[in-house]
Amino acid sequence: MLQSSKSILITCFDKTLGYFNHPFRHIAEKALWREKLMRQAPPDTRYIIFFTPRSGSSRLTDLVQLAGGLGTPDECFNPQHIRNMAKFLGAQNLDDYLDLLMRRRTTGGTFGCEATPSQIHRIFFSVARFFEMYRPTSCIFLIRENIAEQAVSCSRMSQTGFSHHTSSSDPENTGTGFEYRPAEIRKYMARLLIMERQLEQIFLRRSIEPLRLSYEMLVDTDPEIFLASIARHVGATPHRLNDLESEHKKIGDQRNLEFTVQFTKENRRLMAKVARQRVFTLNELARQKNSHF
Image (cartoon, rainbow, N blue to C red; front, side, top):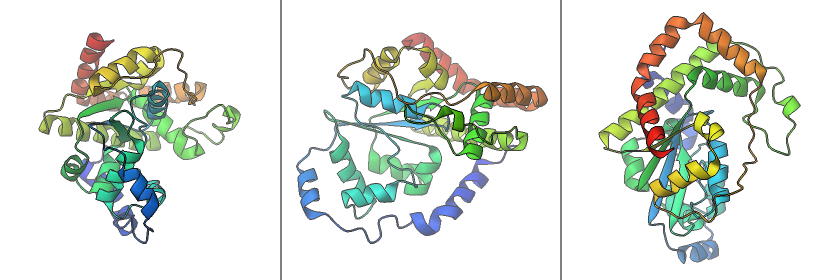
């Protein structure tokens, strides 16, 4: 049974409140470093890539950085990383962190980052506060069209501890211990649906028209095509679009496909319900795909 978005958010919030309410506590200020960063102009263009897990965000941001001129987007608000990043910057609070981070990572007046809905809630505690502080000039929405395959991928990552492999990793070890767990797949599918609904509500309430991308588009489309679309949407100029290749490789194998097929067959009614819930999101994705790609 699908859990409510409220219960998911409360669970995440309760687990992190004690630590993440004070991620900047006892961080030493770096006066000389701050002075240097403050000489850098803050960005005029600030975009955010909203994504759901296992949708190809690492590959996308890797290619964006390789293109140059579009900032260096990564998970700046991931609760697992923000304290280390704040220490590097010498940030004293969230406002300070945003200011220093943007000055540090702006490229040609453009700053980008990526985040999930849960990361926004865990760091900013509300969507309104995030938009007030970050003031994005454009948004990108990255999902995976095959949500069953996406949930299987989440299950695999949970079991194996591997989110992707690069040229320096051993692909033979990334699937060790991976087994079919339908209850776990259903749990991840519920969470993915909640994230999609949360983001659609954000866009609707704020009259935002995001650039919509999908994992499948990133895999099937030449990077120069979707990077050019991103550049147009963001309002920035990439340095190059040709001969780009991400170091992040697909981690899924035949077992992912087999487990996806098995889960889909065993949960036909659930999959039909999920399909109905995703009609708007997938239709909007298809509309933009036909227009831009």
